[in-house]
Length: 442
Image 1: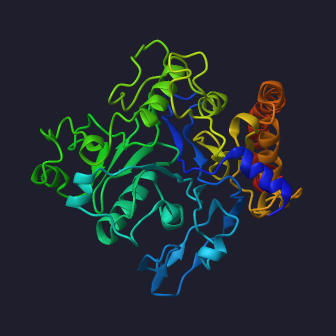
Image 2 (image 1 turned 60 degrees about the vertical axis):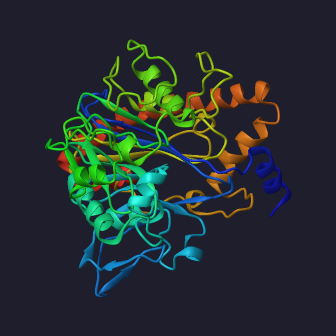
């Protein structure tokens, strides 16, 4: 490891951490798009990420072995999809698809996985986690090549959890141009998913969130005999199928590490609804005070408690030095099919970075976004963004505001440019599809 790499690692710390996410319904967004977004935080800071494109392919094998050793039947074909993989994925997984994190496939199904969540002792004893089961590291690799709708992706992942078991508790987000789903895995074989109302958003930290749902609703999917299982093992004092609390049954609620971030996100987007801090559970879905745009999502994912009642009290802000990357995935129904998906992608700490718009037709990514290792290098986009934050932290009062100001101006330009480019692309697509797709990729 180079001296600069060692310096950066020392400055940024190495303790374990986890992610924060936001899901926005199409009626709650400023442009009618469905959005799923998340910060990817990790225990170490020098975990370079590579942008990747997985082409469609036909399969001949009978068994598909995933990165953690899980084996499932091989689908006859894979859909094309995008991903952001670990720099050393081939070390853990010969196929190089370990921890792909997020992406959009050719059917405009998007997935972001995951926001890790703790499973409580009682649930774990009743239905233990499976060592080589479904885990965060393999979920995008498993689902994106197969799902043709978000709901189909939920059902497919649920099937894998029921059949092969899960190795972790997790929250994840699936979306298409019509709807978004929040899905949670709560034990070795039990899960639940809820369709996010079109007029609302869901703010997610590292605790299971789903509560107050009707298990019989068409907008709720779940593992078989979930209610019976909860009642049999007394995971809830009163298990009401019309007001079901999955988070309390399987997770750990009221942890300030998580609920503080949930309060903060809802306070930013729905300030009109004043809520006390550190409640055991916050509303699962809320309506925003104003339509939510990409800059609003980025602002939430960059937030600290400065200027709030939790300033100096809260343990864990949303903006944290251990961010590897952040993404906002938009699915825009009014755009031509090939251009409906766009990923706003940043490297390093979002508050000191810039979100670069990536249209779905892009298959060959610029070299800086697919190079670099665990040592600092000038040719790596990850290290360029990461190093600026680390160096600014040597005198944060002086340099962090300057760094944020620079990227804020660049981000504002990009948001405007994409709005104009979308209009150009729609017009061009109508007369020359190939030219429009080429322009989007460029």
